[in-house]
Image: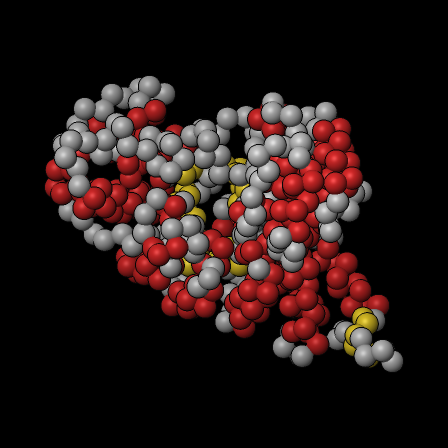
Length: 421
């Protein structure tokens, strides 16, 4: 049944009951969230929660400054007003209004103080995070990247499925080297019962770590290397990587660091191919001069049996990312973060992705640190998704049933299949 649209006398568009049914159908769909950094309950509550933490976990302080004094709400209001229109802030505001009943958009001192009080009250219940995900957001499963703890620390295994971040393995050329999160692979020696003395030992450490991740139920590997270095990874001989390793961090050049990392990334992708790990790649933003997803072409071409999930739509290179998916069938598109960076960019990418035939290779994740931010990000994405699909139905590009099917695949079933959930 095709929805009908009519213009009112005021020139606006309103939707007949069948269209309302469509919007409600999308709103009520259950979700698999493909990417989160949700802090554990004890981490959040140990520092005295306020609205500052919710704003921070929603990326708001990526685009404005956090006040030095966390109790200075007047200064916070001034800073928030500087970013009026920010999608990060809009998504967070939606969550605060719907979860806590406080309207902070536009911000006022009184509203922010009241929001802080209600946040602290909610977090007296250790089940609050789970309630926001499972009951209020209808998220059945969320993939968790716990970069602060190699083996994930404490998390709800019924809600979260962990992914294994691989950045640190590219920094094993020296025991003093660290990735951008301060991680080193040598922390794994004791738990994996292996002392690393040689390069062969180091490769064995990597092998054991990946096997242990598989044993623990990690569902994917994750590269956030765009925050550490350019994501172009050349092929490097093992002898060259061995030479760098044997320097033990002495007189190591930038070329050495790059070569060692290049070899290790290829090595890990070879293992991912053997072990059936999908690989999530941060693309776009980060170290902006090196994060264009086009840098990954040689990897996509070489590792045809590895399923590469390109994050964030590669923003700002959304069309380059779409072109990669059209060129390589082992490329999947994850729109995580994109709807709260720019809903407009997300609309463009989502529509073109569907037109290009990628409705079976699209998914969404929140990419946030607090449950409230995830709630707001999902609300933002479901709105974008509904708008795009409604318009495609109205223009006879899709039927009503096709649009609902595409929505359910993007929100849940594509991820269920890809990650074998």
